Amino acid sequence: MLNKKVCMLGSLAVGKTSLIRRFVSSVFSDDNLSAVGVKISQKALVLDGREINLRLWDLEGPDEYDEAGLSYLKGASGLLFVIDGTREPTLAQALETREPGLKVAGLSTPHLFLVNKNDLREEWRLSEAGLGALRDLGGEVLEVSAKTGENVEKAFELLARMMLEKGK
Image 1 (cartoon, rainbow, N blue to C red):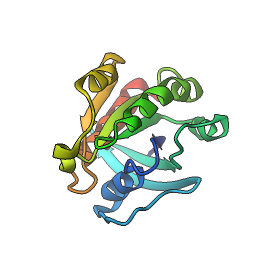
Image 2 (cartoon, rainbow, N blue to C red):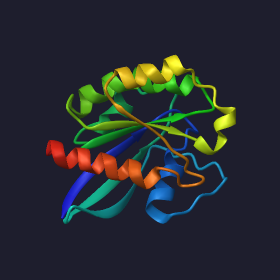
Image 3 (cartoon, rainbow, N blue to C red):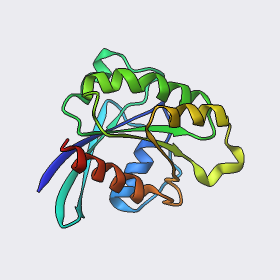
Image 4 (cartoon, helix red, strand yellow):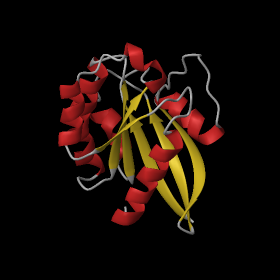
């Protein structure tokens, strides 16, 4: 079985912990479950006959990551940058974190942008220009909902496939 380290990054309350809980345990809670420091969960997948164990590092969500926070990314096989669709500043934070995050994890590290809270689409505050900036970086952008489970499984499986393809 292959073991892969995946780090979740994003501002406070974007839904990193909720996305992991939805993926690992198929549950959602409206309680605010903020991570302190780092919490590690795991889930095994079988993709194309290959077993892969994802070790999911839920990093505390500061407004911006300092050098110590980014040090958790060392040895990561994949990164998930989580954005709250209802809070525009979380998009800017993801854009600002991408480059320093990839410098620590490795420039070729597979990564995705997850725009969470798709169940609250009518409350989204993200501009098309902002979403376009994400797409212009060449990264995949998926709209997800930890609450309903929409595209959550797909996101983690897509990242796992990207990691397998890159040999990361």
